[in-house]
Amino acid sequence: MENDYISPIYKIMFADYPDILTVAQLQKALHISRQLSYELINSGQIRAFKVGNSFRIPKVSVIDFVMKS
Image (cartoon, rainbow, N blue to C red; front, side, top):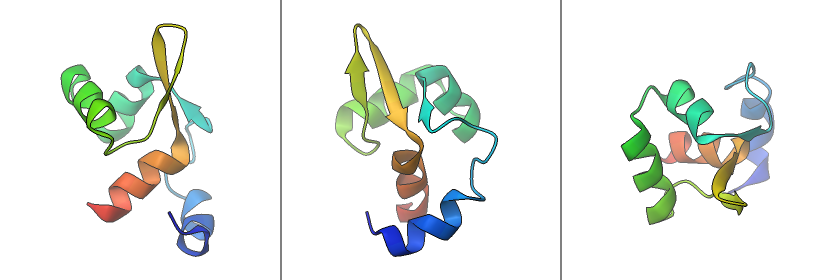
């Protein structure tokens, strides 16, 4: 991910979402199913980390995924 294109986009894209998203917020942001959310995370297409038993997704990872798609 390159910061030069993320910086301006970060301020606009998904502005209503927190910096760290839950899977439910990812679903809502991308209008996708729960299953597809987990598939994208498990395949590494969207970077995420685990906190206990749940995933947390940095908003920059979601933006990066959208920009690459």
